Amino acid sequence: EITGRKHFIRDIIENDIKEKKHETIITRFPPEPNGYLHLGHAKSICLNFGIAKDYGGRTHLRLDDTNPEKEQQIFADAILEDVRWLVGENDEDPWFEGVRHASDYFDVLYACAKLLVRRGDAYVDSQSAEDMKLRRGSLTSPGENSPYRDRTVDENLQLLEAMRNGDLPAGSAVLRAKIDMASPNLNLRDPALYRVKEATHPRTGDAWRLYPMYDFAHALSDAIEGITHSLCTLEFEDHRPLYDWVVAKCPEVRDDAWVLGCLSKAGGNPEDYRASPETPTPIETEPPLKPPRQIEFSRLNVAHTVMSKRKLAKLVDDRLVNGWDDPRLPTLSGLRRKGVPPAALREYAERVGVSKADAFIESEVLEDCVRDVLDESAARAFGVLRPLPLTVVDWTEADEADEALEAPRHPKKDFGVRPLRFGSDLVIERTDFHDLQAGEPPKGFNRLVEGGRVRLRYAYVVQCNSVERDDNGDVCRLLCSVERDTRAGAKGSGARCKGIIHWLRRDDAVPCIVRLYGNLFKAEKPSGDDNADPQGALEELVEALVERDVVDRAYDEPRSVTQLERNGYFCVDAAGSPAIPPQRLPGAPLVLNRCAPLKDVFGG
Ligand code: ATP
Ligand code: MG
Ligand code: MG
Image (cartoon, rainbow, N blue to C red; front, side):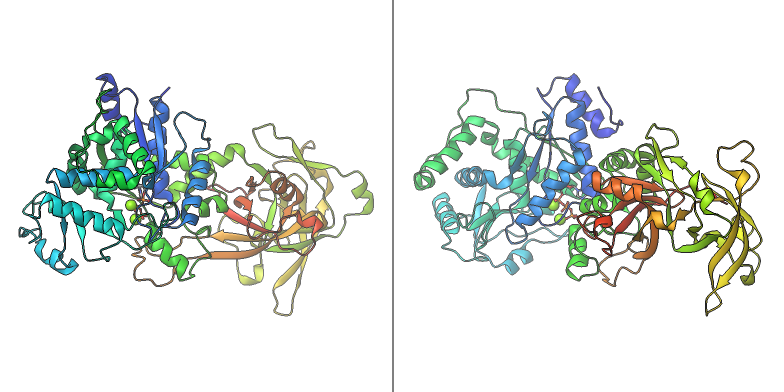
């Protein structure tokens, strides 16, 4: 059953299926473990996994770990955690088959390099990087051949071996494809395929002293895995001719037997294999897979934030944010910590769509998705931000005795009820009271003023008779009386008071700190390079009291999100809060993160 929205890539795939071009549709998501995944990656993940799921195919999660200087195991681990969280499925699913690594294929890629050399399609260049750059030419002028371009096959093989063995220092030699130094496409001007790097790889250790370039490794990894549709962002459009060249020049990699042969030879006795002068011949037991097809789509850009790993890394390294999972960042780990559910990100990926047009998405689009998902699933509760004490002077112990108020946990769903107790010692939000000494209330304000009335939701109408002020003259307590016949649910209790606000009984509520997030950057399209600090409303810390229900749920179901009525969706910040419920650890600060404000707020 097709659940995803149509777009040009799905059209291509549906057509390929109709023409029986492939047995199975196979896509892949190939992140480089040089940082954490972000919203842009979420788009790509949902695209690839969504296609595999809808067309009964598979998708491969492949870590593109070919540059050990920039990559780290912690990034690889974080990527796996994020992908699992986002797709919400486990390895058993047919459309998510375990995890692969480009480094699994180092032996195969190296065998391909030798094939290219033997066939005269690649050579070892000993020019300095500077000379290579000079001879590359520009968009308006053709390049110039390297003086080393016509080395013999034997010489090239020997030099390639020397690179492999670490006998040539970094920078002294690269393996280049022999294509066309006059091509109008700069990527085809004898691009580098391998360079020497004296770096220890997290998986292959010191086994290799040369590492493949992205275009070479990526195209061949796709071909080895039988990827049918290789979906990437538009900046790779110019690389597609090179991608196709690499795949076409090494058809052997589409033959499983040949690939396995390379791997077992490498495992058996690598020296034998590397010394063997003959060209390996493909074993043609089965027809080789069709070459993968690269298709480009536009990257996701979001207003008021930065998205590239490089820019995110800079914010983290400069300590302008507190790590990669800072809830202000558009990283998947940051969004998770903020309380954004994975279903909201999947919905987001659908809404932003897939096209070739450069899109700049408003930051509110994600909030809309979050609200749509959480409106259904989040339990409701009261949370009073910036609390202002309200004393009900005529509430007595006798009233207390017959008191049993309750409120639904969800307006539509059967989530049960939460108990509420009225009392004399209450709090309301400071912003729900308007001090008349500061002037007339804004138009349409029908919450509480001195001498006015307001309904405390699920309870009674109260009237504010007088206020107490602190030394600065600011209102610090409201003295109110209760209208007993207005009890919620009782006959004739409604329609007598315009304003409705939420409240809490102080001794029933749990104190906490609430983090309200704004945009990371004020600028709509921050360069992130100017490097100033993220000047936006980074975060606002606010004192609050919340219903105990919220806290109980947070510790029963980690990552559960609650709608604090009129204030938005909140989750307990796992990193910033105590690991055991605060009732049992008095004084430990409980921290709530707001993952989205509400759109429509009652109260007036
Ligand atoms: P960054 O510039 O953030 O480092 P990248 O493209 O270098 O991104 P990779 O780890 O290579 O990061 O990305 C893995 C996949 O995610 C690629 O197929 C890439 O095209 C895709 N991707 C990365 N950023 C975006 C984005 N903003 N929108 C859509 N897809 C993206
Ligand atoms: Mg990349
Ligand atoms: Mg990158």
